[in-house]
Image 1 (spheres, rainbow, N blue to C red):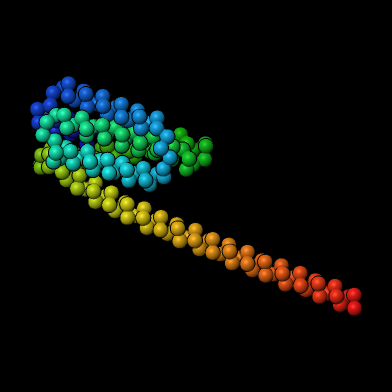
Image 2 (tube, rainbow, N blue to C red; image 1 turned 90 degrees about the horizontal axis):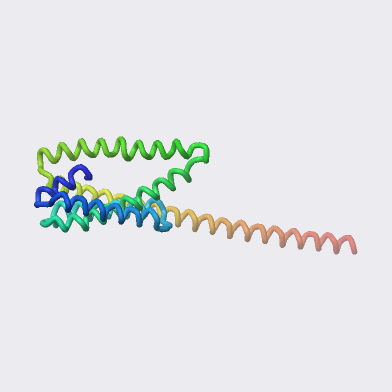
Length: 200
């Protein structure tokens, strides 16, 4: 989307100053996201990022009629990207042993900035040449809504499964404790009976 946002701004009369201000707002918002201490699961972070991109593409595809609308869209972009990128880096370093952290970050950067941006630019560039910039953003917004909806459903199912597993584990622990207590009680009774027999 970065390759076509300024093209869309130019189409509605945006100037170089407008584009520079958009990037300024985006950078400031991204710095805030990097420095914020939002502690959420990586799944929630990804979902929030998808929703933010839905909002941004909706602005570019349907709402934007003057360059000032792009200020809002790029501020959303800065917040979402800063939150996503910082969280992804933290997650990539935590999921591997310390000696593989640099490799994990390299793979993340290759997948996102290398493969992801290249495939995205080629695909959207082809769409733009056929449909136009505005329609490309509209389709991108629809796709992101579908992805965000599917991913939220996946997170819900995953959360429900985890809750059931935790509940089953707690129930098994309770049953085990009850069985242990019963066994201990029976053993104590047996020992007392043996002691009485010896006394007799």
